[in-house]
Image 1 (cartoon, rainbow, N blue to C red):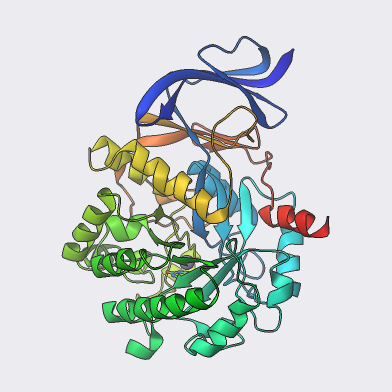
Image 2 (cartoon, protein in one colour):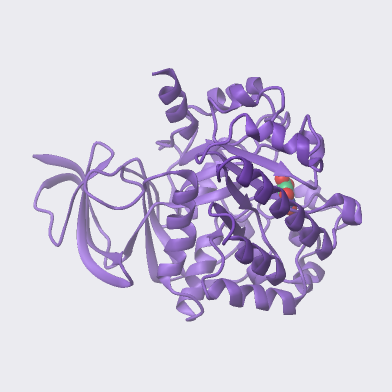
Length: 437
Ligand code: DOR
Ligand code: ZN
């Protein structure tokens, strides 16, 4: 028997140990994992001792497209993800037009087919009017407390919030919260730290009541936490709320206000970068394994927009390609372990999304292969994202993704993403099939 692809001379990360292994892939699935795979293969790749991780998942990206295609398209955004070693991502709904109705979500899904380099789940803003139809197409909803105008209800009104979700509450539904309370400090950038504290308190308080009434249904996910006190608050509430997770971005872990001074609009982001003291404590919490997930919050903007003064430029950092290298660099520096990277970029995201991406015989072949010895100097101009700007400009990292495999196809090798290889699937389609049958 001849199989499609054989990965030779690799190492698997199994419970903190690196175990030599070869992987045979056929028809998009892993068919053999063994010290030596004997089957003949059409293509053989010598991994030269590189480490094979299960395909990594970024639960927070803004792929733009639609009328914001001048910032990023589904093609360029998913190329950026593939370059960053990400095989699956969740797209955020603050597009133009926003994904806050059934009609727009259908359009989003239909337009994505055949254009994706990696797998994508399209999320939506919950809508009082359309919620029952929306759940036939997605299970990931976003509530942005800093931009409530995307919603057809008031999320600051607990009764309205409960009304929307009581119709669909289930353990498979994820609600992700952007926690910055505009009532606290007004909506203008940068919102104060107290806006985060206040929003998180409001959300947790509502969740406890809602979950009690609805038997613990819904998965609640707090996006991009920036304060150690927020982490503590969420950890305390995990005892009461079993499906509660939080995410942190690489920029909030590694950059502070100081970088805003240096990189100006390029480092402008929401929530804003905090003091170096706060950032260091956040990194310490993360390195202790207290934060569930790392996500890029990849938010590309056009060069001309970011050329504006920091007060006028739109907030957002294009982080899809730098997320994994920055974390691998922390592994090489001894700050975190590779197992923690796997936990925050694979295990916990997959659990949140209900995906099975593990490496086993019979699984779909979504793999992220990393070279822990290679160095890479981050340069905006080399990014696949249309936004050629990064506040990590000039930083040299040690440890990079060397190959990204999606549905059994190599989409990236040695930082080259294959423009014509688009094996990415729309994850929402799996749900559509489930609902129809
Ligand atoms: O900095 C940000 N940019 N934060 C957000 O919440 C939205 C994002 C964007 O869409 O540009
Ligand atoms: Zn975001």
